[in-house]
Length: 68
Image (tube, rainbow, N blue to C red):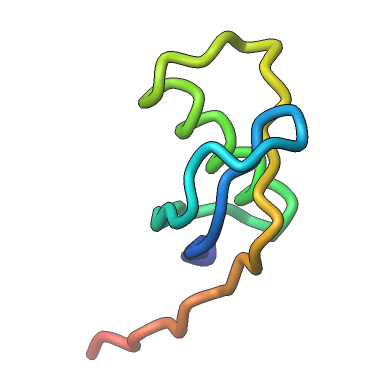
């Protein structure tokens, strides 16, 4: 699994509701990471499951640190 980070605005129904949100997640792909982050935002901010939340910023994969 890779670690992904999002740092950017959050949109709800095409309206900006937060100018900067920073969160990290582990996921096998960038698509799944985005899904995880949207789910987490909804849970942490008391949004209904049907709310259309968008993350228009970039989701970046963080470098892995090798352990010996």
